[in-house]
Image 1 (cartoon, one colour):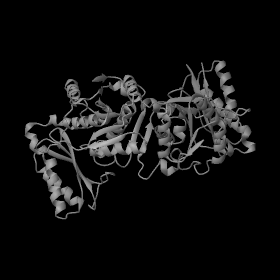
Image 2 (image 1 turned 120 degrees about the horizontal axis):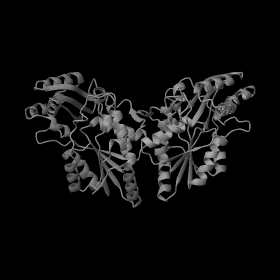
Image 3 (image 1 turned 90 degrees about the horizontal axis):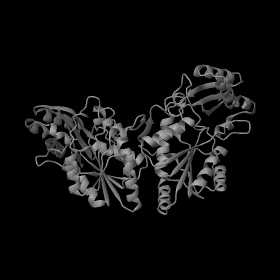
Image 4 (image 1 turned 90 degrees about the vertical axis):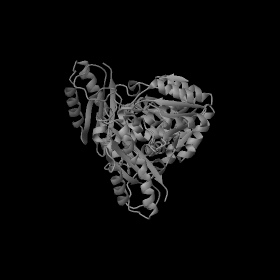
Amino acid sequence: MNIIENIKDTKAEIKRLKGAGKSIGMVPTMGFLHEGHMSLVNKSVSENDVTVVSIFVNPTQFGPNEDLEAYPRDFDRDRDMLNKAGADIIFFPTPTDIYPENYLTTIKLTGVTENLCGLSRPGHFDGVSTIVCKLFNIMSPDRAYFGSKDYQQLQVIKSMVRDLNMDVEVIGMPIIREADGLALSSRNVYLKDEERGAALSLSKSFNLVESLIKDGERDAKAIRNKVIDFIHSHANTNVDYVELVHPEMISSLETIDGDFVLALAVKVGKARLIDNKYFTI
Amino acid sequence: MNIIENIKDTKAEIKRLKGAGKSIGMVPTMGFLHEGHMSLVNKSVSENDVTVVSIFVNPTQFGPNEDLEAYPRDFDRDRDMLNKAGADIIFFPTPTDIYPENYLTTIKLTGVTENLCGLSRPGHFDGVSTIVCKLFNIMSPDRAYFGSKDYQQLQVIKSMVRDLNMDVEVIGMPIIREADGLALSSRNVYLKDEERGAALSLSKSFNLVESLIKDGERDAKAIRNKVIDFIHSHANTNVDYVELVHPEMISSLETIDGDFVLALAVKVGKARLIDNKYFTI
């Protein structure tokens, strides 16, 4: 496995590999890998000649009062996991290589960025779309793999790739969960033992919505309020949002008349957790 | 010469050509070609296996009160000129192919876009950087050729390519002028015969600046005011801006202590003309 710490050498290596006819799969990460990330890596290894994993805690997608400094990091552990999984290259750049002095450019999307985390985290998706565009241009992947836990992010990236006519197939992979239902996240390390039960309220609310829909409820607000009440019935929870949204436009629905995504962001202690589920009607 | 009117077929053809090891040169235009454009096409033909010229009057770089509808068009004439010059492909898309329903994405640059035409034409450079990024992704050129008359545009594109880690060499080519000094522009057709003398005040002001600099003048404001007075001494002129700017940052200078660019935008009758000159100190 090849660890490359700058853009220039990465580009040269990718050019060499593409020249030799190799297909490139890419998994962009912020490191501190878990089985969610590894499911993307495994998929990429199975579908491409070469798998590149980027590890970069991207400062521009963190707000001024967010957890950029505290974000968990463990490169040695990540490297060993990736080596074992058969990844070929780790791209591990420095912030100044990615954003040198006089850096000027931002990619902004309307619509799909304007609800959910786009409301709670102003500028977050500008940071996401810009770094992903840069990583795609550095790595020229044939396929790129993203987890569906960040459902809105996946739609933002698919929209950007479509709009900017980029040549990469964006592949969304299922959320990986603990046995008790908790969606895997690097931020789960923030959870104290006594907050675990409260953290499970996110995934448990899916059953509640399932049964409401089965009973014929079609009013999004009624469903939303019941989910919020359910979550707040657990200690140490503070709902950021609960929304029923259009699966592609990410616009909030008033009435359920087709497939939708239930999207949640909840603060449990100091961990901000997100989760979602796609409902087929 | 191959005329392709949609993105999908263009991408397929470029992929085929690159697979055969051909280098691609690209000249993005809004059509109504003149010898300025043709100097770019000739350069591309001489440096690349395949030259693609795009003709697209990009609506997103025109403001609401600008000349989008009136912008001159003559596809048959453009086609004949390009055929004669040895261009290989004309990419001639429709606005709905470029900006389909639910189009969401814009590329924005700070700094380099904030002065000169960025002040006079809000949103103009967002439209420029976004369409050029799309064209680069559609055409995957090795080299792309731009005229220096749009000096600020050239710096915007160079900055975007650097920031987004794109694999294209951006080549700026000298301004082509009529024998009397008027910079070629598709918008020169708007000039009435009696406005021609006034239009020449832009390029004539270069001599004025040359002699001021030679006499030791280093105060940008003093030079600027003399140029404005000179231009306004011609009938039917209305200065939009005259600025002495840093050649890369496009920031206005107060004192001349190195190379600079004199950049002008002047309304002459209903034509808004721009011109510039790079001064070496």
